[in-house]
Image (cartoon, rainbow, N blue to C red; front, side):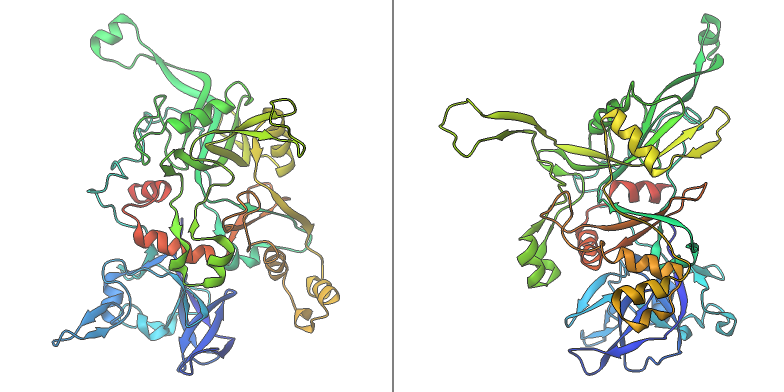
Length: 473
């Protein structure tokens, strides 16, 4: 979950459509509202959305809201406690992140030594920025103060965490001509993993028990499950949702189906119980975009076709006469659902072999478990700019890197209604380089989702489950 600021050179500016004293800079493909003092070629620091600026950095640059001696608003515009960077609309224009002059770092380092591409988190021991994670409100009943009951240390030494997914826009140079790239839906749920792996166990003799010794160590294959970072014990009690029983149900879906050494990584979506969605909901009016509310309704609930309580779905013929003849009862509409996005094979020495997406999907179909939807698979051409120019007739594509070619492809799919939930916005797209021996995945979120995510975090009584674990880690 790496977050950092980036030293960038402004190469594109345009006028704000509804404010004479503002303009729009484009950084990593993101529009950011800036003042008229910003010029093309200027070196600046870009802080992406979902970050938190350091307290000392904000103090030196007068970035947080404060009042003068007369009680009038003065200083900056950031919340003094949160100091978080959000995606917002400013007078009708998108602003995704924050740009600050390079001189804002002068108190912390010699800015003449900084160059385009430098990544910044701390300078000379002073925190400049980090990932924003809402602070816990221990008075809230929605969070128990625990992220789940952890299993004993070294219980499953080959049960590896899923790697953090990097941002596509900041890693375009990872793509090369000839790479095979697959685009899949990014889903907004809580991550899970289940494996059938050699587990460390102990056999105690009566003397071991008497002397309180662990006993003789041995290994035995068994099922192990957990969140993205935490290995849960067999009871799965406690946790962010007050009850992790839904994870036990999910883990049971894989039992008796995984082969030795297989680990499945997946997203759990829907509802924990009739009153608790897995991911927080938000009122769409808070996004202040009437068109968005018109399209998606008054409330965004990330349900993915699930229901708060399991329901029987029935198919009723058009000529139904009121009797039960011809009425077909189908499977339950699930309270929560599982979508696999990655599978690996791990041997007893801990060596990992990454399954290809095709292998993963074959195994999921054999196990009767869903996998994330696929949008497109393609090979990056030798001359991507020529391909785009031929298709669009736009000469701006004449010079195009492989990474920019992938980004253009992603932008076809990263916005709009979720293809599963249909009534809520999709989170975005994941681009995976299929032909690499090790996993290479990159995410790209859409702007409207980022705005909703910022609102949810502002209203949160606590971090969500995964961020809570990251904070504790």
